[in-house]
Image (cartoon, rainbow, N blue to C red):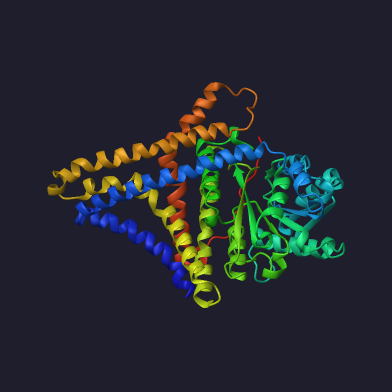
Length: 492
């Protein structure tokens, strides 16, 4: 059964794309009608999504100006003091400057540092240099926190792949055994945050996280998702990396406006008490950040949700050694994110076997997962490229018809109207830029605005193509499956 669901997404995507090519040759009129309706659908969807984008952006701006620690003290006095934050930083071979700047920023949070349990989770295969770096970080920053622990995940443990999920599980078990249990800290009082090593939470992050945890309806059945801003090094990366970074941010903003559809992504937080109950993170998957949501959702029979924080964390955009290496790294990152399709057969198999999960939950998440990855792999091709196929492949009778004459005009008009959303994104991206580095001029801001003309190319090359490749690899299985790829981190 699982194998069927591994094949299904790629088979559907390829059938759609190749079918449109074939039908553009044999039945071009039908393809014209389909493409016009499809473009119209996406125009309406763009308007719908940008309503949520702007709504969430306003909240983001407001929440970053709120003193959340003061709100805790005023509204939750006597409750918030018991909360402990376990913060785990999985690390591989990142440079000292990346790690140090993360901890320098992290240690300036307004939340009391003595309530923090910090774990620097190393990989044994990273070697002695990584261990020496970790000791340097502990020597400089360790005393600032309530507890500071360095863990080292062994290589080649049975049933594991080399990736963040297996490292996080090892680290969480160690901190439970060495700090939480010996100090009798109630699991229910601990919120665990898993951050990439380049993640710098805003100074009020743990304040708003604690406030949300103490005010939402079901805190122990909820994950908590911040807004990732890939702006740590935004002035030093390619236009394509900036576009992908801001596009990811905007998608998260849109989803935070629709919390029923939220799935954990990258750095996020959750109640620690759930981890021993579900068996921690799966150790044999690449997309551990989204898998942990589905593990919880299945374990608790659909009773799990993601609470939006509308609050930023700051991360690195993809870089590399030279322009082409950076583009290659960007493609690999997007392919790894698209490998989240591995959750589809995992969830579908569980839905097929489990009778204790409500049917509405099964229907909702079956469609949400499939539709998200199917659109990711196909929509950019259909919108930006396939509108030309009927005129290229259709016969002479079609090319001299009114359909052939009007197709590029209609699709062009729809895409141009939809470009209002691109202009909105360009404006918001400039507003989200960090304080300007030395030498940053007004003309640079103009270039950052104009880079959005690359959106169609970016969506195809760094969107649909890596998504289609990931789904195809899942379909082929075996040696084609993707392992975990560590995104290079570098501070300029």
